[in-house]
Image (cartoon, rainbow, N blue to C red):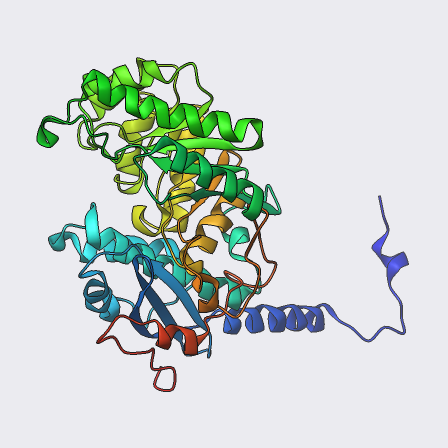
Length: 414
Protein backbone atom coordinates (compact mmCIF):
# COMPACT_ATOMS: atom_id res chain seq x y z
CA UNK A 1 0.00 0.00 0.00
CA UNK A 2 1.29 3.46 -0.87
CA UNK A 3 1.64 5.87 2.03
CA UNK A 4 0.33 9.09 0.53
CA UNK A 5 2.04 11.04 3.31
CA UNK A 6 5.37 10.12 1.70
CA UNK A 7 4.23 11.82 -1.51
CA UNK A 8 3.36 15.07 0.21
CA UNK A 9 5.74 17.94 -0.45
CA UNK A 10 5.56 20.38 2.47
CA UNK A 11 6.71 23.14 0.13
CA UNK A 12 3.85 22.49 -2.25
CA UNK A 13 1.13 25.08 -1.71
CA UNK A 14 -1.66 23.18 -3.47
CA UNK A 15 -4.57 21.97 -1.40
CA UNK A 16 -7.35 19.61 -2.39
CA UNK A 17 -9.62 22.60 -2.56
CA UNK A 18 -7.19 24.30 -4.96
CA UNK A 19 -7.03 21.21 -7.15
CA UNK A 20 -10.81 20.92 -7.20
CA UNK A 21 -11.13 24.52 -8.20
CA UNK A 22 -8.58 24.05 -10.97
CA UNK A 23 -10.36 20.93 -12.24
CA UNK A 24 -13.71 22.70 -12.12
CA UNK A 25 -12.23 25.57 -14.07
CA UNK A 26 -11.24 23.20 -16.86
CA UNK A 27 -14.67 21.61 -16.82
CA UNK A 28 -16.38 24.98 -16.93
CA UNK A 29 -14.26 26.16 -19.86
CA UNK A 30 -15.08 22.98 -21.72
CA UNK A 31 -18.74 23.43 -20.97
CA UNK A 32 -18.64 26.99 -22.25
CA UNK A 33 -16.96 25.84 -25.45
CA UNK A 34 -19.90 23.55 -26.06
CA UNK A 35 -22.58 26.04 -25.07
CA UNK A 36 -23.41 27.00 -28.66
CA UNK A 37 -26.65 27.87 -30.40
CA UNK A 38 -27.78 27.69 -34.02
CA UNK A 39 -28.60 31.16 -35.29
CA UNK A 40 -29.62 30.56 -38.90
CA UNK A 41 -30.07 27.97 -41.66
CA UNK A 42 -29.73 28.97 -45.31
CA UNK A 43 -29.76 27.23 -48.67
CA UNK A 44 -28.80 27.87 -52.25
CA UNK A 45 -28.95 25.68 -55.33
CA UNK A 46 -26.06 25.18 -57.75
CA UNK A 47 -26.67 24.22 -61.38
CA UNK A 48 -24.30 21.27 -61.74
CA UNK A 49 -24.91 18.12 -63.75
CA UNK A 50 -27.65 17.81 -61.13
CA UNK A 51 -29.13 20.67 -59.09
CA UNK A 52 -27.00 20.61 -55.92
CA UNK A 53 -28.81 21.98 -52.86
CA UNK A 54 -26.21 23.38 -50.49
CA UNK A 55 -27.19 23.97 -46.85
CA UNK A 56 -25.42 26.25 -44.38
CA UNK A 57 -25.96 26.10 -40.59
CA UNK A 58 -24.71 29.13 -38.63
CA UNK A 59 -23.95 29.44 -34.91
CA UNK A 60 -23.38 32.15 -32.33
CA UNK A 61 -19.80 30.86 -31.97
CA UNK A 62 -18.99 32.28 -35.40
CA UNK A 63 -18.71 28.75 -36.80
CA UNK A 64 -20.74 27.67 -39.83
CA UNK A 65 -21.10 24.24 -41.41
CA UNK A 66 -21.99 23.19 -44.94
CA UNK A 67 -24.13 20.24 -46.02
CA UNK A 68 -25.91 19.07 -49.14
CA UNK A 69 -29.41 17.72 -49.74
CA UNK A 70 -30.20 15.36 -52.59
CA UNK A 71 -31.36 17.19 -55.69
CA UNK A 72 -35.03 17.62 -56.47
CA UNK A 73 -37.49 20.50 -56.64
CA UNK A 74 -38.77 21.68 -53.28
CA UNK A 75 -35.95 20.46 -51.07
CA UNK A 76 -34.63 23.99 -50.45
CA UNK A 77 -38.10 25.12 -49.40
CA UNK A 78 -38.37 22.19 -46.99
CA UNK A 79 -35.03 23.11 -45.42
CA UNK A 80 -36.28 26.65 -44.88
CA UNK A 81 -39.49 25.26 -43.39
CA UNK A 82 -37.41 23.43 -40.78
CA UNK A 83 -35.12 26.33 -39.85
CA UNK A 84 -37.33 27.56 -36.94
CA UNK A 85 -37.06 24.10 -35.34
CA UNK A 86 -33.27 24.48 -35.23
CA UNK A 87 -32.63 28.09 -34.25
CA UNK A 88 -31.58 28.31 -30.60
CA UNK A 89 -30.66 24.61 -30.47
CA UNK A 90 -27.20 23.20 -29.75
CA UNK A 91 -25.65 21.97 -33.04
CA UNK A 92 -23.67 19.31 -31.18
CA UNK A 93 -26.86 17.39 -30.36
CA UNK A 94 -26.96 15.84 -33.83
CA UNK A 95 -29.01 12.74 -33.06
CA UNK A 96 -31.55 14.64 -30.99
CA UNK A 97 -31.97 17.33 -33.66
CA UNK A 98 -32.33 14.69 -36.37
CA UNK A 99 -35.16 12.96 -34.50
CA UNK A 100 -36.63 16.35 -33.63
CA UNK A 101 -36.87 17.25 -37.33
CA UNK A 102 -38.31 13.86 -38.27
CA UNK A 103 -41.03 14.28 -35.65
CA UNK A 104 -41.77 17.90 -36.49
CA UNK A 105 -42.08 17.09 -40.20
CA UNK A 106 -44.17 13.94 -39.79
CA UNK A 107 -47.16 15.63 -41.39
CA UNK A 108 -45.11 16.30 -44.51
CA UNK A 109 -44.06 12.66 -44.81
CA UNK A 110 -40.80 12.36 -42.93
CA UNK A 111 -40.31 8.63 -43.43
CA UNK A 112 -39.01 9.08 -46.98
CA UNK A 113 -38.71 11.37 -49.97
CA UNK A 114 -37.83 15.04 -50.12
CA UNK A 115 -38.28 15.64 -46.39
CA UNK A 116 -35.63 13.07 -45.47
CA UNK A 117 -33.34 14.40 -48.20
CA UNK A 118 -33.73 17.90 -46.78
CA UNK A 119 -33.02 16.63 -43.27
CA UNK A 120 -29.95 14.89 -44.69
CA UNK A 121 -28.55 18.21 -45.89
CA UNK A 122 -29.00 19.75 -42.45
CA UNK A 123 -27.52 16.70 -40.74
CA UNK A 124 -24.38 16.84 -42.91
CA UNK A 125 -23.99 20.55 -42.09
CA UNK A 126 -24.33 19.74 -38.37
CA UNK A 127 -21.44 17.28 -38.66
CA UNK A 128 -19.36 19.98 -40.32
CA UNK A 129 -20.22 22.43 -37.51
CA UNK A 130 -19.62 19.87 -34.75
CA UNK A 131 -16.27 18.85 -36.19
CA UNK A 132 -15.15 22.46 -36.27
CA UNK A 133 -16.36 23.16 -32.74
CA UNK A 134 -14.70 20.03 -31.34
CA UNK A 135 -11.64 20.33 -33.62
CA UNK A 136 -11.98 16.82 -35.11
CA UNK A 137 -12.59 15.51 -38.64
CA UNK A 138 -16.14 14.41 -39.40
CA UNK A 139 -15.13 10.75 -39.63
CA UNK A 140 -14.24 10.89 -35.94
CA UNK A 141 -17.87 11.74 -35.16
CA UNK A 142 -19.13 8.55 -36.82
CA UNK A 143 -16.71 6.10 -35.26
CA UNK A 144 -13.13 6.77 -36.35
CA UNK A 145 -11.13 5.75 -39.38
CA UNK A 146 -10.55 2.39 -41.08
CA UNK A 147 -8.76 3.89 -44.10
CA UNK A 148 -6.95 7.08 -45.06
CA UNK A 149 -8.42 7.21 -48.55
CA UNK A 150 -11.62 5.96 -50.14
CA UNK A 151 -11.96 4.23 -53.49
CA UNK A 152 -14.01 6.24 -55.99
CA UNK A 153 -15.86 4.64 -58.88
CA UNK A 154 -16.56 6.72 -61.95
CA UNK A 155 -20.04 6.71 -63.49
CA UNK A 156 -19.24 6.82 -67.21
CA UNK A 157 -21.18 7.99 -70.24
CA UNK A 158 -20.07 7.26 -73.78
CA UNK A 159 -20.93 9.24 -76.88
CA UNK A 160 -23.35 6.57 -78.08
CA UNK A 161 -24.32 4.48 -75.09
CA UNK A 162 -26.20 1.99 -77.25
CA UNK A 163 -23.00 0.94 -79.03
CA UNK A 164 -20.86 -1.62 -77.18
CA UNK A 165 -17.70 -0.32 -78.85
CA UNK A 166 -18.43 3.27 -77.78
CA UNK A 167 -18.79 2.20 -74.14
CA UNK A 168 -15.63 0.13 -74.34
CA UNK A 169 -13.65 3.02 -75.79
CA UNK A 170 -14.78 5.34 -73.00
CA UNK A 171 -14.01 2.69 -70.39
CA UNK A 172 -10.46 2.38 -71.73
CA UNK A 173 -10.01 6.17 -71.71
CA UNK A 174 -11.29 6.63 -68.15
CA UNK A 175 -9.06 3.84 -66.86
CA UNK A 176 -5.90 4.77 -68.76
CA UNK A 177 -6.13 8.57 -68.87
CA UNK A 178 -8.02 9.40 -65.68
CA UNK A 179 -6.65 6.60 -63.52
CA UNK A 180 -9.88 5.00 -62.24
CA UNK A 181 -9.85 1.31 -61.43
CA UNK A 182 -13.60 1.19 -60.76
CA UNK A 183 -16.21 2.31 -63.32
CA UNK A 184 -19.91 2.00 -64.14
CA UNK A 185 -22.00 2.14 -67.33
CA UNK A 186 -25.74 2.21 -68.05
CA UNK A 187 -27.58 -0.81 -69.43
CA UNK A 188 -31.04 0.75 -69.72
CA UNK A 189 -30.17 2.05 -73.18
CA UNK A 190 -32.03 1.52 -76.48
CA UNK A 191 -31.13 -1.65 -78.34
CA UNK A 192 -33.23 -1.10 -81.45
CA UNK A 193 -35.16 -4.30 -80.73
CA UNK A 194 -37.83 -2.93 -78.37
CA UNK A 195 -41.49 -3.68 -79.11
CA UNK A 196 -43.11 -2.03 -76.07
CA UNK A 197 -41.22 0.29 -73.70
CA UNK A 198 -43.97 0.27 -71.08
CA UNK A 199 -44.09 -3.43 -70.18
CA UNK A 200 -40.46 -3.67 -68.94
CA UNK A 201 -40.05 -7.03 -70.66
CA UNK A 202 -36.71 -7.82 -72.30
CA UNK A 203 -36.92 -9.84 -75.48
CA UNK A 204 -34.09 -12.15 -76.42
CA UNK A 205 -32.38 -9.68 -78.80
CA UNK A 206 -32.54 -7.00 -76.10
CA UNK A 207 -30.84 -9.27 -73.58
CA UNK A 208 -28.21 -10.11 -76.19
CA UNK A 209 -27.57 -6.41 -76.81
CA UNK A 210 -26.96 -5.75 -73.12
CA UNK A 211 -24.69 -8.76 -72.87
CA UNK A 212 -22.71 -7.39 -75.83
CA UNK A 213 -22.15 -4.10 -73.96
CA UNK A 214 -21.00 -5.91 -70.83
CA UNK A 215 -18.75 -8.27 -72.78
CA UNK A 216 -17.11 -5.47 -74.75
CA UNK A 217 -16.43 -3.27 -71.73
CA UNK A 218 -15.25 -6.03 -69.41
CA UNK A 219 -12.93 -7.57 -71.98
CA UNK A 220 -11.51 -4.17 -72.93
CA UNK A 221 -10.47 -3.15 -69.41
CA UNK A 222 -9.74 -6.68 -68.22
CA UNK A 223 -8.20 -6.81 -64.76
CA UNK A 224 -7.37 -3.09 -64.82
CA UNK A 225 -10.76 -2.08 -63.41
CA UNK A 226 -13.91 -3.36 -61.72
CA UNK A 227 -16.97 -2.66 -63.86
CA UNK A 228 -20.58 -2.24 -62.68
CA UNK A 229 -23.69 -1.74 -64.80
CA UNK A 230 -26.81 0.28 -63.93
CA UNK A 231 -30.33 -0.69 -65.04
CA UNK A 232 -32.27 2.15 -63.33
CA UNK A 233 -35.20 -0.05 -62.19
CA UNK A 234 -36.16 -0.83 -65.78
CA UNK A 235 -37.03 -4.53 -66.10
CA UNK A 236 -39.54 -7.15 -65.04
CA UNK A 237 -38.51 -9.75 -62.51
CA UNK A 238 -38.27 -12.46 -65.15
CA UNK A 239 -36.24 -10.27 -67.48
CA UNK A 240 -33.89 -9.29 -64.67
CA UNK A 241 -33.34 -12.95 -63.80
CA UNK A 242 -32.57 -13.81 -67.41
CA UNK A 243 -30.21 -10.88 -67.73
CA UNK A 244 -28.42 -11.75 -64.49
CA UNK A 245 -27.98 -15.35 -65.62
CA UNK A 246 -26.72 -14.27 -69.06
CA UNK A 247 -24.03 -12.09 -67.40
CA UNK A 248 -22.71 -14.74 -65.04
CA UNK A 249 -19.79 -15.67 -67.28
CA UNK A 250 -18.46 -12.09 -67.21
CA UNK A 251 -16.60 -10.38 -64.39
CA UNK A 252 -19.39 -7.94 -63.48
CA UNK A 253 -18.71 -6.01 -60.27
CA UNK A 254 -22.44 -5.58 -59.80
CA UNK A 255 -25.72 -5.18 -61.69
CA UNK A 256 -27.56 -2.21 -60.21
CA UNK A 257 -31.31 -1.72 -59.75
CA UNK A 258 -32.59 -4.23 -62.32
CA UNK A 259 -36.23 -4.13 -61.10
CA UNK A 260 -38.50 -1.34 -59.79
CA UNK A 261 -37.66 -0.36 -56.19
CA UNK A 262 -40.98 -0.82 -54.38
CA UNK A 263 -41.33 -4.60 -53.92
CA UNK A 264 -38.45 -5.96 -51.87
CA UNK A 265 -39.82 -9.52 -52.00
CA UNK A 266 -39.32 -9.51 -55.76
CA UNK A 267 -35.92 -7.89 -55.31
CA UNK A 268 -34.87 -10.77 -53.07
CA UNK A 269 -36.01 -13.32 -55.69
CA UNK A 270 -33.97 -11.61 -58.40
CA UNK A 271 -30.87 -11.34 -56.22
CA UNK A 272 -30.98 -14.95 -55.13
CA UNK A 273 -31.66 -16.23 -58.66
CA UNK A 274 -28.22 -15.37 -60.02
CA UNK A 275 -24.55 -15.35 -59.08
CA UNK A 276 -24.19 -11.95 -60.77
CA UNK A 277 -23.90 -9.54 -57.80
CA UNK A 278 -26.94 -7.26 -57.42
CA UNK A 279 -26.70 -3.76 -55.91
CA UNK A 280 -29.74 -1.78 -54.72
CA UNK A 281 -30.48 1.02 -52.29
CA UNK A 282 -30.38 4.56 -53.65
CA UNK A 283 -34.19 4.77 -53.82
CA UNK A 284 -34.71 3.53 -50.26
CA UNK A 285 -34.86 5.81 -47.23
CA UNK A 286 -33.46 5.59 -43.72
CA UNK A 287 -32.33 2.50 -41.86
CA UNK A 288 -35.92 1.25 -41.74
CA UNK A 289 -36.24 1.05 -45.51
CA UNK A 290 -32.76 -0.36 -46.00
CA UNK A 291 -33.46 -3.00 -43.31
CA UNK A 292 -36.12 -4.64 -45.47
CA UNK A 293 -33.49 -5.20 -48.16
CA UNK A 294 -30.73 -6.32 -45.81
CA UNK A 295 -32.43 -8.63 -43.32
CA UNK A 296 -33.83 -11.04 -45.96
CA UNK A 297 -30.52 -10.71 -47.86
CA UNK A 298 -32.30 -9.24 -50.85
CA UNK A 299 -29.10 -7.58 -52.09
CA UNK A 300 -25.48 -8.55 -52.55
CA UNK A 301 -24.32 -4.94 -52.22
CA UNK A 302 -26.21 -2.09 -50.57
CA UNK A 303 -26.02 1.31 -52.27
CA UNK A 304 -27.45 4.10 -50.08
CA UNK A 305 -27.18 7.72 -51.23
CA UNK A 306 -25.97 9.61 -48.16
CA UNK A 307 -27.50 13.07 -48.89
CA UNK A 308 -30.77 11.28 -49.59
CA UNK A 309 -31.04 8.35 -47.16
CA UNK A 310 -30.87 10.42 -43.97
CA UNK A 311 -27.33 11.78 -43.66
CA UNK A 312 -24.03 10.65 -42.20
CA UNK A 313 -25.12 8.92 -39.00
CA UNK A 314 -28.06 7.22 -40.72
CA UNK A 315 -25.73 5.89 -43.41
CA UNK A 316 -23.42 4.60 -40.69
CA UNK A 317 -26.40 2.79 -39.14
CA UNK A 318 -27.30 1.26 -42.52
CA UNK A 319 -23.70 0.07 -42.88
CA UNK A 320 -23.86 -1.51 -39.43
CA UNK A 321 -27.00 -3.46 -40.36
CA UNK A 322 -25.35 -4.50 -43.63
CA UNK A 323 -22.29 -5.69 -41.74
CA UNK A 324 -24.46 -8.03 -39.68
CA UNK A 325 -25.22 -9.88 -42.94
CA UNK A 326 -21.68 -9.48 -44.37
CA UNK A 327 -22.93 -7.18 -47.13
CA UNK A 328 -20.61 -4.47 -48.46
CA UNK A 329 -21.57 -0.83 -49.04
CA UNK A 330 -21.11 1.02 -52.35
CA UNK A 331 -22.50 4.52 -51.90
CA UNK A 332 -24.53 6.01 -54.71
CA UNK A 333 -23.55 9.64 -55.16
CA UNK A 334 -24.41 12.40 -57.66
CA UNK A 335 -23.32 15.24 -55.39
CA UNK A 336 -21.11 18.29 -55.41
CA UNK A 337 -17.80 18.08 -53.50
CA UNK A 338 -19.74 18.63 -50.25
CA UNK A 339 -21.99 15.56 -50.47
CA UNK A 340 -19.17 13.53 -51.98
CA UNK A 341 -16.82 14.32 -49.11
CA UNK A 342 -19.56 13.56 -46.56
CA UNK A 343 -19.96 10.14 -48.22
CA UNK A 344 -16.20 9.61 -48.21
CA UNK A 345 -15.93 10.53 -44.52
CA UNK A 346 -18.47 7.84 -43.64
CA UNK A 347 -16.91 5.36 -46.07
CA UNK A 348 -13.62 5.87 -44.23
CA UNK A 349 -15.32 5.05 -40.92
CA UNK A 350 -17.06 1.78 -41.83
CA UNK A 351 -15.38 -1.60 -42.33
CA UNK A 352 -17.56 -2.76 -45.22
CA UNK A 353 -17.05 0.09 -47.70
CA UNK A 354 -16.45 -0.85 -51.34
CA UNK A 355 -16.43 2.55 -52.99
CA UNK A 356 -18.17 5.92 -53.39
CA UNK A 357 -19.60 6.98 -56.74
CA UNK A 358 -18.40 10.04 -58.69
CA UNK A 359 -20.87 11.30 -61.27
CA UNK A 360 -19.27 14.53 -62.50
CA UNK A 361 -16.11 13.51 -64.33
CA UNK A 362 -17.29 15.32 -67.46
CA UNK A 363 -18.06 18.55 -65.57
CA UNK A 364 -14.95 20.67 -65.75
CA UNK A 365 -15.68 22.93 -62.76
CA UNK A 366 -16.91 20.39 -60.16
CA UNK A 367 -13.91 20.95 -57.89
CA UNK A 368 -14.06 24.75 -58.31
CA UNK A 369 -16.92 24.91 -55.79
CA UNK A 370 -14.43 24.47 -52.95
CA UNK A 371 -11.07 26.05 -52.20
CA UNK A 372 -9.30 22.71 -51.83
CA UNK A 373 -7.62 21.07 -54.86
CA UNK A 374 -7.06 17.53 -56.13
CA UNK A 375 -9.96 15.98 -54.23
CA UNK A 376 -9.92 12.85 -56.40
CA UNK A 377 -6.61 11.51 -57.65
CA UNK A 378 -5.98 8.12 -59.19
CA UNK A 379 -9.50 7.01 -58.42
CA UNK A 380 -9.09 7.74 -54.71
CA UNK A 381 -10.32 10.47 -52.37
CA UNK A 382 -7.98 11.22 -49.49
CA UNK A 383 -9.73 11.93 -46.21
CA UNK A 384 -8.63 15.31 -44.81
CA UNK A 385 -7.57 15.74 -41.20
CA UNK A 386 -9.02 19.26 -40.98
CA UNK A 387 -12.02 19.72 -38.66
CA UNK A 388 -15.47 18.91 -40.00
CA UNK A 389 -15.72 17.89 -43.63
CA UNK A 390 -12.41 19.55 -44.38
CA UNK A 391 -13.80 21.62 -47.27
CA UNK A 392 -14.34 25.36 -47.71
CA UNK A 393 -16.91 26.68 -50.17
CA UNK A 394 -15.57 29.05 -52.81
CA UNK A 395 -18.40 31.56 -52.66
CA UNK A 396 -17.43 33.20 -55.95
CA UNK A 397 -17.72 29.84 -57.72
CA UNK A 398 -21.00 29.07 -55.95
CA UNK A 399 -22.41 32.41 -57.07
CA UNK A 400 -21.19 31.88 -60.64
CA UNK A 401 -22.92 28.51 -60.94
CA UNK A 402 -26.13 29.10 -58.98
CA UNK A 403 -29.46 28.13 -60.47
CA UNK A 404 -31.19 31.16 -61.98
CA UNK A 405 -33.22 33.00 -59.35
CA UNK A 406 -31.25 31.63 -56.37
CA UNK A 407 -29.51 33.89 -53.88
CA UNK A 408 -26.05 33.46 -52.39
CA UNK A 409 -25.72 32.71 -48.67
CA UNK A 410 -26.00 35.89 -46.59
CA UNK A 411 -22.90 35.35 -44.47
CA UNK A 412 -22.97 38.84 -42.99
CA UNK A 413 -26.42 38.52 -41.43
CA UNK A 414 -25.97 34.99 -40.12
